[in-house]
Length: 240
Image (cartoon, rainbow, N blue to C red; front, side):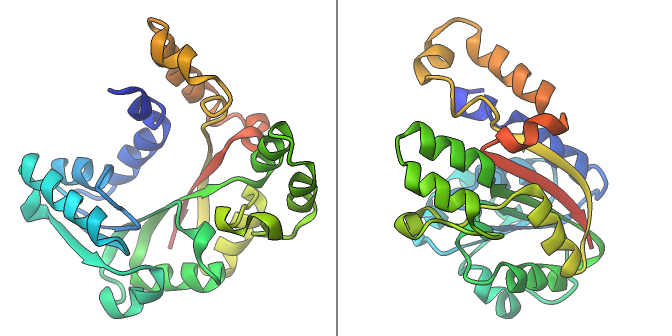
């Protein structure tokens, strides 16, 4: 794997566990872009539907799917979470991937409700969201102390007014409350990228064996609760 892929191994391992529960699953990847996960999922024999607002990303997805001989298992449509009700029939999907999307929607609760409606009973949501505590640390380390304070003191999904383009940030507890309120039961949580965004790239990209060692370290702390507030992202698995 390339360095970037190594740093996604924790998330991919969790996805493999989910997919093993649904042989020949119908998978919806919201904001799936160029198909980083969709193609790999299709290679495992699943049918994948990708919804993304970028026509360029979807074109790249089409080329990648053709190159990997899985174009017959991937359907790509332009749209976003707000279009879900018109694009995907209710109760038609086994697994939904919502990675890096909830941060940008105007109403996270409505978005999760829409996802719940397209899932079959017993279906699973893989939710990856930027984590607020780590964002506070990152802004403070960059010298943006006022932004860090605003983010620290904000409510669920808050983002400093001075940095709205970065999107919302959530804590794991806030996400679990949102999921419960929209009909989901959270079954697991993982810390994603605890160290990867703090370690200088030159160390893990150029030092022999460093990238693999970093990936192993990320795996080792992914389910340790004390490290969750330090992670750049939190990954929650929730059942419908």
